[in-house]
Length: 177
Image (cartoon, rainbow, N blue to C red; front, side, top):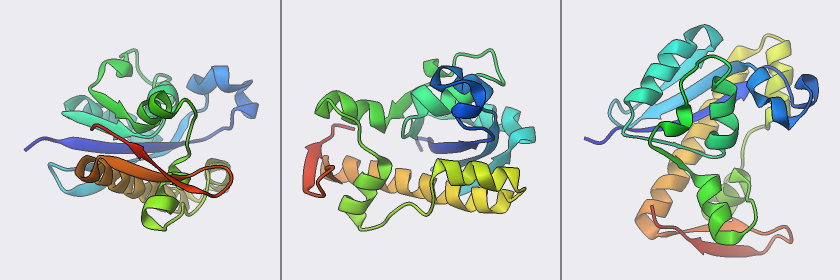
């Protein structure tokens, strides 16, 4: 069985706190979550388990995320000398941006395709980290991984996704995953 690992992480610091988006590597991981199709389960990682997370990503037949090449992997580069961009990866944001010539949010896809929305956003997760609320971050991150998995599976099965444009109009985009 092919092991697809769906993946997302949250950070300890915002772009403003590390001197801008050019310093993602300095944001620090607060919590990461994966879902492995081979195991059929979610795994939650704290910063102390980052080596276990890296091993799981390395063992995957495919890592699927949303903005994982530019963001999540860059955060993890603060913990390893390994070039994570060499892993077999589908970054759905990169793929969709190449097709549409503009960026979409995971929320706009989830809302238009499934009628669900994210439960929080990244800056809230950073506030939770500063308050020591790691369980809240883990729950939010698990939900994001679940949405990522649903979006990918829907695209695989239907060869298209729906999204809402900035005017609230529901549109579709073809995908070839």
